[in-house]
Length: 284
Ligand code: NAP
Image (cartoon, rainbow, N blue to C red; front, side, top):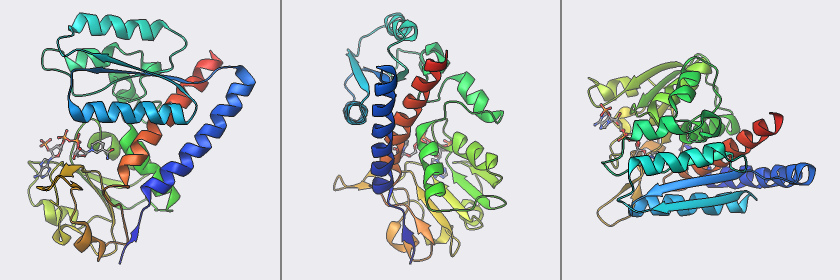
């Protein structure tokens, strides 16, 4: 039976440490990190995510501000607001909650954020830095997974890692972070042939698809480390992962649950990146 990775516990520990570091810097500089979050429209999931980010920021001692903008907000208006945060030295992190309404060009918006304040790591410059092996801001979900590997002493060097899902926010940056730690990485997606066969060769299997209970024990090698990023609702509205936890836990060596696995670490890493952006701004 697999050991279960306690994402909630690790996130709480790291957030407590971050609160201490923030308090210390406040004493030394009289300043604290500031996180500005912009959300457009009324998507219920986005509203929950944004509220959680604000709560977490305040809990670790940051300044936090959420701009809730109406669905009809124009692109130029949003870009102008981003620019005010870009220019304002009191805000060290700027985050635009995705998805944006269809009439707004997501790429243009992400590219408008000052890369030094792009705490989500989605700006093309930060993506390029990551891919060229010189990361500065890294997307929070894969960054949180790397922290889990560190905490649970998961050896990556030389290991076979398979990532299922190639989104810009999870799969692609995950593959790059694993590669940087000298894993041998296979990045798979919806057009991959013989997916279960490929996944079954993995020492480390990361699943970020968005399809509830998609990965069964047929995808998993005995003793593999299995990370489930998925957040899906079953027919009863219960939060479930992409992995059939009960049967996969029987053969994996280490596994994340859903909930209380990857999710809490994502938000923690967002706070950590904001703190790091603040620290870098002090050196300027
Ligand atoms: P996404 O942008 O929809 O990407 C999904 C990826 O999965 C795509 O690359 C897609 O392939 C691939 N895929 C879909 N069906 C597949 C199949 N049958 N076989 C193999 N690959 C398949 O999703 P995302 O934003 O990466 O999120 C993935 C999941 O993680 C979602 O459940 C999301 O809610 C969750 N999530 C959780 C957190 C967290 O903090 N816990 C953070 C982010 C996301 P193609 O590219 O070929 O279409």
